[in-house]
Image 1: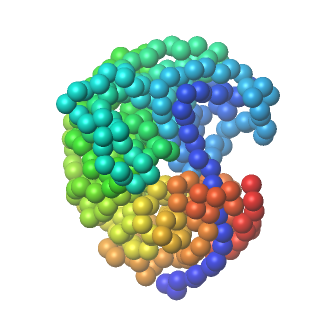
Image 2: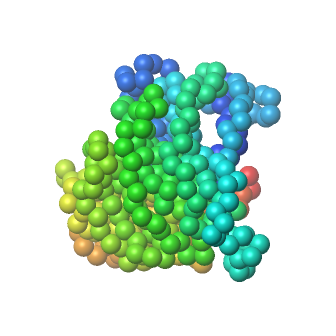
Length: 381
C-alpha cells in the first residue's frame, strides 16, 4: 500500500482537575436511572464514551465564565490532574491530599539534590482519595481514602499523584493511582477490592499518568517508564491478574484504545519505539508499527478500521494505521503528518475530522481523516 505524506498543523486542550470542580448549567449528559444508562449517555472514562473527546448525546454551553453557565462550584481539597467522570447523576473524581505528616527517615525537600524542573521527592504522606458528587446540586455524596502513603517519587508541576482518570461502568468505579495502587468501588462508595501493582520508576520523576481502560470485564493498565515497562490485564470483578507482558519502552503516558476486527478485540498502545496492538484475550501482539517520537502522551483514536496515533516531543508525528494487519505493518501506514502534532494534549475526532494542537501551544489544526488533508492550519485559539 502506498504511503501518503501530508503536512499540517496542531491543537492544545488539557483537561485538569485540581481544587475545584465546575459543572455547567446546561448538562452534558441525560439523567436516567444509573444502571439503565448506556455508555453513550455517560462520560464514563478519560476522553469520553468513545474515547475520542466527543459525545453524541452532549449539549453543553458554548461559552461560560466565573458566573455564566455555572450551576455550582465546590472545593475538592488536595491536588489532582485527573478528569472527572460521569455516570447517571454522579460525578466521580480523584485527588491526592497532603497530610503534612513528615517521615523523619526521608530527606527534606530542601536537602535533596537538584533535579530537572526542580522536582523534589516528598517526605510527607498523601491520602489517595476518591469522591462522588451529585451532578445536579454539587453536594458531596461520599469520599473515601483509598490509601495513605509517602510517594516514592515526585512529579512535574503539571502532574499530580492523582493523574489517572477513573473508569466507570454500571457496576463499579475503577481508580488508578499508579504506584499508589488500583482500587474498585461500588457506586455507593464501598471499596470492593484493591491491588498494589508495584512501583514505577518514571524518568526524571515526571510522574505517572496513563488512565485505566475496562472492556469485556477486563482492566487494562499500561505502565511505560524508566524501569521495566509493562501492559497488564486484570479481572474487573476481583482485580486478579489475567496476563502481563513486558514492553521495550521508556517514558510514555498514552492511555490505550480498544478496537475490534474479525471478532478479535485489540488493545492499541502508543509509545516511542512502536505502536502495538495486543489481543485482549491472550496478550499476544497482533501488529506493530514504528514512527512516533519520544515521550508519547496523546491517546490513540480508533475510527472504523483505522487508528490515529500521534506524538509531539523531539519531533512531530501522526500515523493513520489500519488495524487489519498482522506483524510488522510500518509500511502499511495509510498516511502520515510530520509537523504540528501535540506533546501532551490528546486529539478530538468528530464527524470525520481530527482536531489537535501543536506541541503544548494554542495553535489548532484540523485534518480530514480520509487522507490527512488540512481543513484548518495553525488557527490560534
